[in-house]
Length: 339
Image (cartoon, rainbow, N blue to C red; front, side):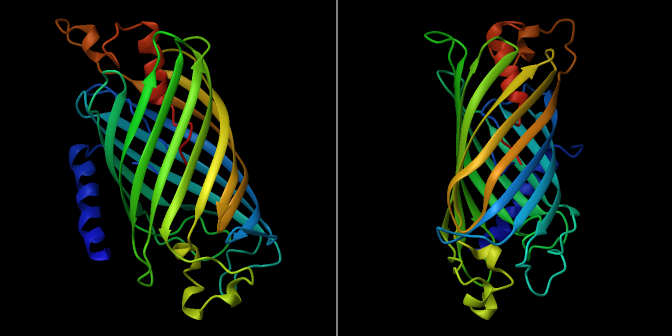
């Protein structure tokens, strides 16, 4: 599997770079894709608090972790059906407690900052008839040799190839303004110590447009690791010596997060959004007590030629300026669940 992954990752990455040299995700992107030559730039700030550590399903009091993330996200329509995504998180984190990992200096209570994993994705919109269905392929590649051992580690320093599909529905009759969006993805994760720990990821967002500019939503996202190891309640000493440094990379981590949020369109190009999330169930790893995200998105559109129909550059077959087109546009720009 490792050899196959190493062959496939450069292909996915090269495809994204080749298609958009001037210029994907671990959490929800979008089923909607921008029109050719159009796209969006978004910046989200997320702060997370961890006070619970899980050994299997048992909560262990092992100190607090504070993490702040600035996520810069770019999406661009190569055609009216194909979009390329690029994202890079900047992570600042610290650990405060009495159970620092031995052999590392990152658990000393000080904040440390690092860029983490560069994320590419290529999405292809199959259909917008009835529901919006968009398969994707993406890669996660560490951007530098950041620390992965320690409570305050900003990431896991692992390559991953993801394949999956997004689906969404925006109701125009019955209950106009209601929308449902979701994703299932499977990640082929780089093996560590010859231990397989591929994972399934799923997201669901349900919301309602109270007007064309304002919407509120609830969301759920979860992950399930196929393989990996359980972390013992006795801590690092309970692990075989060869697993201790890499235990975060090879854990069997399951999680379910629930949350809610809202977004507001300042105009047809700019949106602000915010959300609150908390982990409600899990196995191993760090259990997030709360995560608060706020952000801003800017959607850009290409200029139309005088003889070109304006409708050809709209985000859907609906006329530009219509309620449905405005709603689809703001849904396309939002990165409410990413980070």
